[in-house]
Amino acid sequence: MSGQPEPARAEGRRRRPAVVVGLVSLWLAGPANLPLWRALDALPELDGPRGVVFMLALGLMIAAVVAALLSALAWRSTLKPAIGLLLVSAAIGAHFMGTYGIVIDPTMIVNVMSTDARETRDLLSLRLLLTVVLLAALPLWWVLRTPLAHGRWPANALNNAGGAMLGLITVVVVGLVVYKDLSSTMRNHKTLRYLVNPLSSVYSLGRFAYAQDRRPAGPPQAIGQDARTIPLLSGQHPPLLMLVVGETARADHFSLNGYARDTNPGLRGLEALSFKQVSSCGTNTAISLPCMFSHQGRKAHEDRGQDSENLLDLLQHAGLAVLWIENQSGCKGVCDRIPHTRPEIPAQGATPPEGTLCPEGECLDETLLHGLDERLRALPAERRARGVVLVLHQMGSHGPAYAKRSPPSRKPFMPECTSAALPQCDSGSLLNAYDNSIAYTDHLLTRAIGWLQDQAGQYDPSLLYVSDHGESLGENGLYLHGVPYAVAPRTQTQVPMVAWLPAATLAADHLDLVCLKHRLDTPLSHDHLFHTVLGLARVQASEYRPELDVMSPCHGG
Ligand SMILES: [Zn+2]
Image (cartoon, rainbow, N blue to C red; front, side):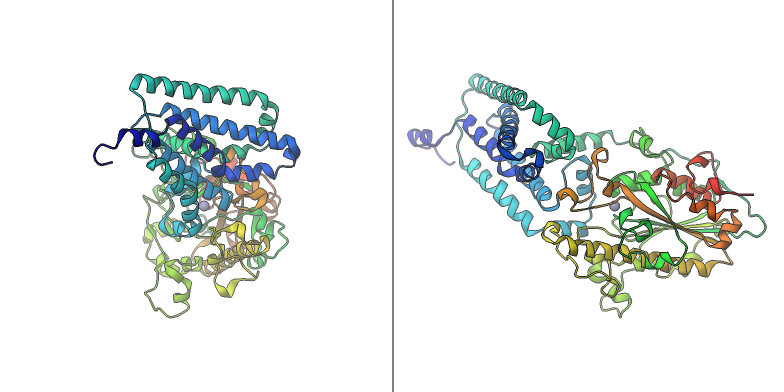
């Protein structure tokens, strides 16, 4: 670096950029795609020599695409930074794909960007560090130490164009040779394309940057300008609706929906209505949450040109008292314009039981119920007289640390997986830890209903619980959630939804319980949430659509 090196020695160590591009491309296509090769190796249709040929061909195609990209960037000032970027993103991608079986896609990046420090602590690990050192740091160290013999710019440009062309021609020729296997494999296993490293990571980062750019700007469009509460009839009290927003709960792990293990011992005894076929709006919190509270429904919300106010704004416009209580990483903008609060974390050394409910500064969901009487009394009296909507945002079954979601005294299923590297746990202990979190949600809802029962006489209470999305628990090698909606497995999109309406509330709202019980198998979605809540809160607004109110066909009299 310093002074003039001896010409002869320096020339001897210099390498042509094309050689470095070729070696880095093979490295990225091979070791950095271990999750992809493992997934392909597990496919029965790729058994035998034909599968080996197909995988070699696919590896060559990936290397050729990377080589074409790097060749185009093979200038003195751009080649090494580009190699560094690809190596690091490939290593991080390979870690998350290999450890959690999660794919790197635009929604995953939204996930990572909006994850708070506590969640990141669960995700970061020594394994990630090792993967980055092995897959990125070591080859990068070699690349940075290797002096490159870039020619003068006309020759450099010619070489770059030639390299890029060669790469593209290789992709096309090899692609044509294995076209039949390639198209059928990618069609039958759509999630595989997201395992192609580093291209999917780079593509997703680009899409994310583009989407950030195009994110609806400006203040949200007002809704519910004509919203108002329906005047109380004789025998009616103001509605008191508790809306519990669940986290990462799967519909098929509720025993109310037919799960073989008893994960709902509390709700079972309370005549709770469990809607068995509810699909979510997204496969992660950042997408599902705003969509659930939107009046637009999934499709229109996804395509929106401008943000709108949401269900909670509308309830507030109608004059109701609304309060959001948060026990997670935030409400994703949903509660921005309404009162919101958090359970108070007790001071260090606080005495049990409060002390044990917030271990390591993270509170268990039961703390959402602390001081509810005072919270209710503190809401404005004139609003309370029209009705109250309390939203509880759970930590629920948030992974990968499922075991942290239930207290030691509430773990019916043992032993539990306590590692964040989920594939290292046996599936039995993983299911135990997850099911304990579901059973704890059942306990939370049961206690919440107990509190609501105490409010009868002053209010007509009701509870509605729905999760934001599901979870993969190792099916097909997938863990956690966040797979793009179009190709997501049902385990990630089918969510539990439970309503509890005591006899007095059913009578006050002229709701027919038998009719409601006949609707439990109706296919529903998060699109129904907005309108169902308006119905339960007895609010009229031009945005209300009765055909999307789950309860409306059961209104008698
Ligand atoms: Zn979530």
